[in-house]
Image (tube, each protein chain N blue to C red):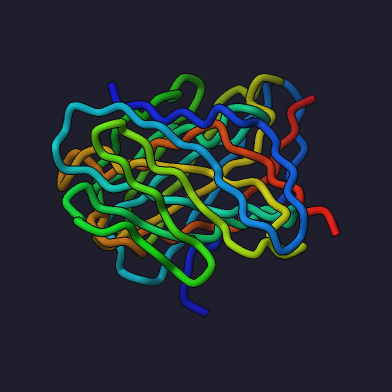
Length: 114
Length: 117
C-alpha cells in the first residue's frame, strides 16, 4: 500500500546511545516532516524538508539531526539520546500542503530512553 | 508566531448526542488552512476535515462539521450523533507557510473525547 512507512516501530535506547529513525514514502511527495508527540503537548515539529537535499529546523530541533539525501527518505538521528527524548515520533509527507487531504502520516515510532 | 489552542483536555458525551470540540487559532497570515485529526488508541493520525481561510461555507464531512468563525479565530469541530468508535484524541491543526516555507502543520494540545454508552 502506498503511504508513509516508519522504521522501527518501537525502540528502547540507553542514555547516550545513538540511533536513526527512517521515514520512507512512495508517493513522490516533496515535503516531509518529523514530529514528536508528548502527553498534553500535541505534536511538535522537529525538522522538515521541502525537497531532496533540503532540511530546516522546526519548533524543537535540539538534540536531533536530519537528512534528505533521497526524495523518498527522511532520516531523523539522535546522536546522544537523553531521557527527555522519550516520545512517540511521527513522520508525515505532503505533495501539496494547500490541499485538504495533503498530509499523510506514518504510524509512529515509540522511543523510550532509559 | 502562529498558535493553536485547544482548551478542553478531556470531554465526555453520551452516545448519539452531538459534541463540540473547541479550537482557537492565532495568525497574521490572511491565507491559512485548518485541519482536524482523530487519533484513536491505536495511534494513527486520521484526517477528518479541512477549512480554508477563504472558504465561504463551513466544511462538512459526514457526521463532522467545522464551525468556522473567522472574526473570532475559532474552528470548532462538531460531531453529530456520537458513536462509541468516536472515543479518541482529537487534534486541531493549522498550516503555516507555503512553498519553500514548508507548509508546516502546527498542532493544538488535543482533546480526549470519551463516548459513554
